Amino acid sequence: MGAQDLSVFSLASLLIFLFPILYISRYLKLGINKEILVGVVRMCLQLGFVGLYLGYLFKFDSPWLNGVYLLVMISIACYSILKSSNLKFRMFFKPLFFSLLIPFSIVLLFFNGVVVHIDNLFEAKYLIPVGGMLLGNCLRSIIIGLTNFYSGLKKNEREYLYSLTLYNNRTQALKPWFKESLVAAINPTLASMATIGLVSLPGMMTGQILGGSVPLVAIKYQIAIMGCIFYTEYFSVILSILFSLKTGFNSFDVMRPNIFRNDRN
Image (cartoon, rainbow, N blue to C red; front, side, top):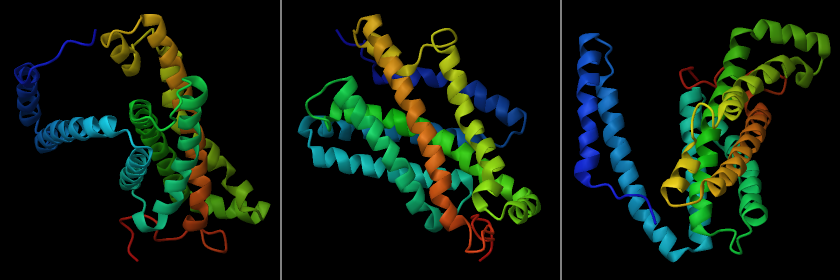
């Protein structure tokens, strides 16, 4: 027995809570009403479109088609990360793409093959939803990691250059910023893992229970997913910083002056 279906009218009834939000935001002159409306409309249109083509993906269940769709998801994630991190797309897309692809693919295929034991590792029912959860969480962590790393270096460039003269080694000189960025990136996930089940019931577990799964089965899946999310985030943040160093620094180990989107060439 699946979850209770929702009518269009039922969904539209939720808009009743949007009107006081728009009124309060306008009264306080927050200037975000346009962003709120655009966000709500985009969410509805994008999820509606996803619902349509996911139906086709699940129907055909082609390993090639599913794999291509995941590559598209990774590309979109990279664009969103670089936009939020204020880093130039052309300079950082390639290193960021592979820093996501490598741990994401390893953890996802391990989950499908070793944890769930499905015969077709590229089965759309598992590949697309689980892959989406991994990418969605990596998005936040990598944004925090890259932003902290390069913004911190830009603010403390003299300190970095001084450390470089002491160590004569870029790796040692960058170590404080690397450690700080990694900790900042994974702290939200660690906090979520520490309070999960006590403060909130996570999405996958709730979805499985609504879909008719036994709570214990849903909990097992949620434990597995949280582990996969943490592993993917951790390695993706590390690789995103390491892979970007060649692009972000010149041959003299000095950070390039034009890596941010608002910098002039």
